Length: 155
Image (cartoon, rainbow, N blue to C red; front, side):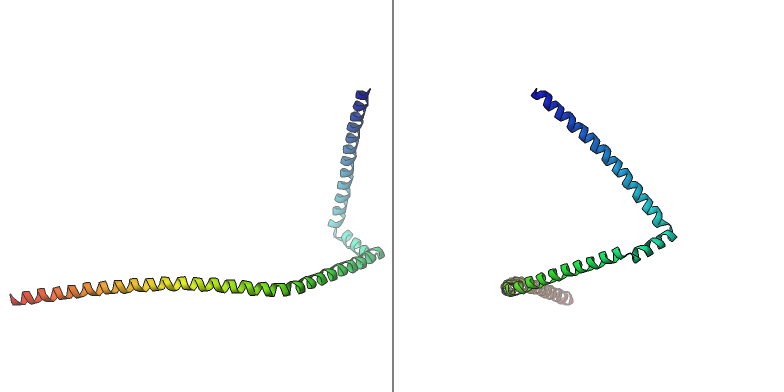
């Protein structure tokens, strides 16, 4: 008997889902028709102008617009106040954290400057050594060329 009840419940559930899917497809078809008719009306310029004129003159639309304006203004006012409060709270905290961050940044910059100065010192030393080696080789070459020219003059 329990199996029959379960089978009956399953059948009822299946029937309801079929009916709901049929209703939803009918609803979608009706909705599509309404949207299509609305687009057709709005695509006609004369009908569009008349519709907009009627909507603009409608008392209900005016009331809805005024209510929307009031609600939007209230929401914006509340958000602005909460933002100002958050900024006021955060300003005192951010000033102290900004000081800490700036001192950390200054220390980092100092260490980077020191590293760069060390590199520049090494480069200067290398350039000095290169210049000395080049000048010593030039002196040797000059001395050798002078001695060879004086030897050739003697002969």
